[in-house]
Image (cartoon, rainbow, N blue to C red; front, top):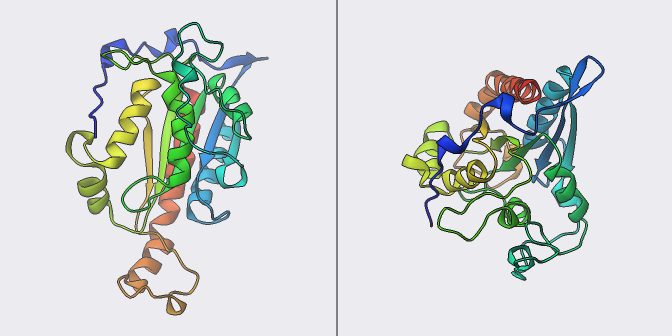
Length: 247
């Protein structure tokens, strides 16, 4: 995997950024997209997304949750139209499907939150397909992988997972962002801004663990986590939504 170096000196002060929320009367109105790549609506990842959305709305922002699994789209087709000099699709994905209008809307929004369950130590496959279409057109093939995104969007990442914080940090992030999740976040920072990270650890996955082959998990521990820790993680998502809408 290629390690992405982020040049923090190129990140402008908040007041100088072109994507500050637009004034709506006396209140600033922000448009935030929350990209949910979980196939399970109403479950852990979706609950985190809903809390984040409430936080945005609490500050007067507008938030839309996009359920990727409801869309008919594919990942990058390697046509390279987004890299063709003087081409009509330079800097944007040329392939047309149900994702196209959403990609365009995101490019003119104020912020984006990437929400995904962790599968095999990485983001979900549908999130990978989405980010291929969103991120790849917004980098140049120069020595610095320079961002050509229309805006330096505010960003957040929301993860839900079966494992503990220690496993997540040691195996998935790794030192210097060298793990699969670390690399995912490095690309987001390279193209937009450093993402705020919100995590739901050791989540309760099944409604009834006795019906599933899941003996590796301590059900009592997971139930305690669901009752005592997950509400705090939902609160963190809510606060992150408020923060994004306030920037």
